[in-house]
Length: 393
Ligand SMILES: Cc1cc2nc3c(=O)[nH]c(=O)nc-3n(C[C@H](O)[C@H](O)[C@H](O)COP(=O)(O)OP(=O)(O)OC[C@H]3O[C@@H](n4cnc5c(N)ncnc54)[C@H](O)[C@@H]3O)c2cc1C
Image (cartoon, rainbow, N blue to C red; front, side, top):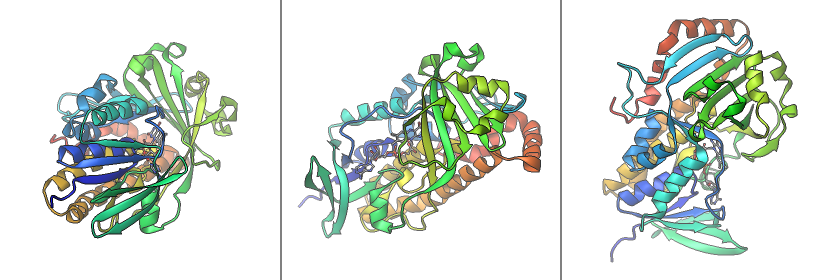
């Protein structure tokens, strides 16, 4: 009897869609189980650094994503209180080409592009409105039990990839390691019409303003018509939602210490969404048998180094490569995990560390600023271990 080619994928977010495309290219029939009723255009801006675009290229999705994105030109870091520029680092310059573009786009556009590619692939099956409630492994593989319109349904696969995000059911069933922990950081996001801001903010640069206990990042999206603004503060507010509406007046007092420029940028926003950043400790073992994890389910990434989507896309590319090698699915899953575990936990640590450095005060802040002034245009090079991955550069 021919062996089934069906691999279940839990979640049709960024990682799940990319994994389905990668698995289909490797000769499998992925079934995407997504609890939302359809692909929903959620999320604000997202940066796709060269490691992320290289993974997109490998799964055949870069051209479409690129159509809806701008290529970043420079990273500019400023002091949030004085408005002084501390460092400028060209993203792409002679002698420093990461072999793949650094793109600025919207999460919704990235997800829509991946969805389009997956939808056009006859091997990929979508099951929307399917909320995974339980998994059972057995001799034929794994059965996922989902709840749809109040009815339970069974889905059978030779394996399952848990790409069901930060609050992953797959992870909790496998490891029972409790919910993610709120990090004490809250992000405020807004899309500001570019016409409300100084014209240089429509240039394709990523600008980062640092202050004690807070930082602000902004870059243009939507063909330069809008500027994606994200401010992160220390705050005890928590919620599991990504998109809690909020008002500018509710922004924590930390803003009052900021200089004129970052305040102007924030005040240009009319609608804000709040996002309580959560984290999880490193998992020593991701999967078991014919179950594995991918993306935030395996390694949530604080957004300080902009690698949440990047790490999930890298996972998806690697997964396809390992299953393609033709070994038993369980062996392929373990080989994929071995390849990804060390790198993703290093990325998690780098993200946490960057948060501390961005928000530093006192002596640490002065040391940071001195170092920034000294590293200047080599700033991006310091994280080249992240950006060069998979690019061949
Ligand atoms: C609504 C939303 C908005 C976001 N906005 C931003 C942003 O603006 N900037 C940013 O940097 N990052 C954002 N992120 C996070 C970013 O997309 C992820 O960190 C990164 O892309 C890793 O992707 P992932 O596939 O692991 O998880 P996600 O992209 O979070 O996808 C997880 C998917 O699993 C589905 N799911 C969850 N539980 C179940 C279940 N029980 N059964 C079936 N399906 C399930 C979810 O509906 C979701 O589609 C957002 C995530 C979401 C869900």
